[in-house]
Length: 281
Image (cartoon, helix red, strand yellow):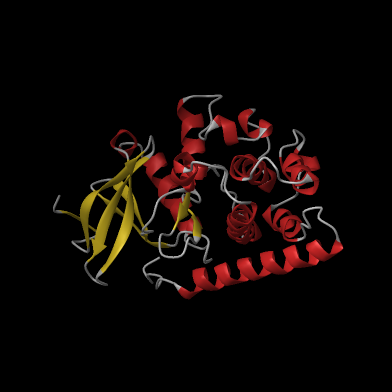
């Protein structure tokens, strides 16, 4: 398409996706000679100064996150009154693609591996006082080379939600199926809304034969009262890590050893591939 952003630094190649708030393009960072993904604010929001400021502010908040399971934000800028965000490009599909394409239930160990990574990335964000607000399979990328899960669109959900409240009172941004009751009711937003969404994702991801203990954990995530859920992703991740599968003491030790090894190897693989953060932020 031969279009450039950032004083000719970024060359847009083709569109990767489009949503109500922004369009995502595959681009090349000509300065560092690498592929990146660029999220460009939609035309219909470009004329609103408050929306542009909010979009850029939330992108800068997301850029503070530095974790192997979170898509890294390299740069933010504005071109022709349209803010954009430069992020690492993940070569692979989404968890939604994986779920839609599977012919049978995902294995329990694989499901727990992905859920563990999801909790790890969210726990880092929650420790930085940042709530995602729109966790769903479409916002969970799976890197093709090693299956590393990467959470995308941190901060953008908040910007979109606040923008929509300005224009359409009583409406919030997100996918109803994954949104906690208090989020749908425009109530108090805490890390528990992300925990609820994790519970919905877990319910879709795990096989039906998941064991009583795991059913209890998923059920706790989905409780209507946020005070009855896990308080944040760290506590949810800890509960998942302690699962024994209800198979007896010997099997419990084996399962814990296997799960710990698998998650440790995955974290190492994810951590080994780290992109250099742009110092322009």
